[in-house]
Structure formats: structure tokens, C-alpha cells
Figure (tube, rainbow, N blue to C red):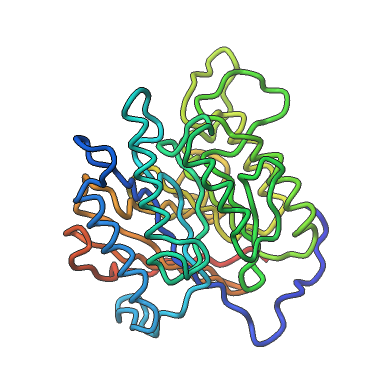
Length: 336
């Protein structure tokens, strides 16, 4: 790892980055009329937005430690904004309606839609597995108007920003591609590994600042070294997973964030398939937050101080008609 100078952001009072993490909203158009939203999908996601808007200023539950939910710096969306941008044929037109509904609800900088907070989204496999859909193009356009960005990649898609001294990097569906490994991948990484390496070298370097990375697909289950002759094409290429972890170990990573699995899973990632590791990068795999086919949904609230990462979950069992804090708090001490 590069030699680190004393963190320039750690003088008192210590800053706190505070934000929500949601994913897998799967906005879905009506199967009989592609120009209209499916009513269940629209209702679930509208209720989700209302909860995100109303929680700041209210109290955390006693079981999660109490205190007041702070005004967030923003909301991170971990991908699968919509449901049908990965389809072929006539159903692909559903994505036009879906991304328009997402933009109307989520806005961009906190004033253009129904959401009161700035949003930082990445695309998922349902948004564009090869990176060539209306959803991916819309994210690129949004990046031109997204306030407060530090860096935008040459392809217009990957980007970075800073909240309270923490550096965040949005990396799309998966992180790749490892140099020298030419086999075909299931998903297009669109040079996200190269952007990550360039961005961290230029904007973090040896400062010791905490880093948060965001992508859609989970990675731990692909974190093993597999001989070329035994490689099968999975959601994440094994070589890309290794190269990604090797890049992160050079920096002080406060969290890696993903969605995709439709289940909450918080653990330390040590570059292997072990999700019970005592050391490693805090990995925050958030539940689905607005999927039309599930009554159970959830999103995370995250706080990062110079010393610690604190995570809580807010969840529903009835499609966001009612919801409550999950009676647990997850804390990860940040590496020195």
C-alpha cells in the first residue's frame, strides 16, 4: 500500500458521512400496456420514497441505539433501477416507461423529483447487462447535471464524489476488466476497474481518506482463483474479482456496497469466498427496496466517522405500508 500521511480530514469536530442505501427497485411497466406503470410497482416505490423522505429528524429505535436520524448527504442506489432493460424484442420498450418513472420519483439533486435528497445510482443487470440501453444512457446524461461530482470517466458512466471527507466511487454493474484476461464476460464492465484505479490514485493517493465503492453485483462468491481451463462464465469473472480486491487493498476502504441478491448481508470481505472473515473490507449487500414481486423490502442507513462504520436497516413486510427499524446495529471499525 502507498505510504499514508495523516488524514487531513480528521481534525475536530470529526465529520460524519450519513446516507441511505437502497437497491433493486425494479420499476416495472404494465405487461398489457407498456406505456403505463404496473400499479403494484408504482405504489411500492412511491411508498419507499415517502419513507426515505420522512425518516430524517425522527428517532432510531432503542434496539438500534436510539438518537435522531440525521439529514442525509444523499441516497445511494445500488442498481436494478428498472426491470425490463435487459429484455429483447417488444418488451424492451417497457424500459422507456420504467426509467421515466424512476426519474420522476427519484429526481437527481434533491429538488427535481419526489425524493428530497440527492441520489447517486449505478446500473444493474436488469438496467443493461452490456451497457447499451436507455437506462445506461440516461445515467450518462444525469452525470452531466449531477451536482457535486469529483470525477466522471471518459465514457460518461462511472463517477466519483465526496461526502464529509469520504471518497465515493460509482462503478456500475461489475468491476473489471483485469488486464491480460481476454475471455468473454457475461456482463460488460465498461472499464470500471481502470476508472477505479485512476480515480483513487488521483483523488485519494496516500491521504488515508476513507473510500466507499458502489457496484450492483455481489462479488464474494466469485472470489477464488480458478484455472483458465475450469472457468465458466458467471456473473463476475474470477480474474476481475481478484484484480478488484487487489486494487482495494491499497487504500483505506470503509465499505463496498452492492445489491442484486435481494437479501441483506453485512460482512467483511477478505478477497475469498469466506463471508465470516474477521478482517477485511466491510461489505454492505442491501436487500431489494421496491421489487413488485415481494412484500418484504429493506434499505440501509449508513454513518461513517473517522474511526467507525455504523449500519442500520429499515424494513417492511407489507410493501412499505408499514415499516420499522430492524432491531440490530452493525458496527465495523475502520482500518487505521
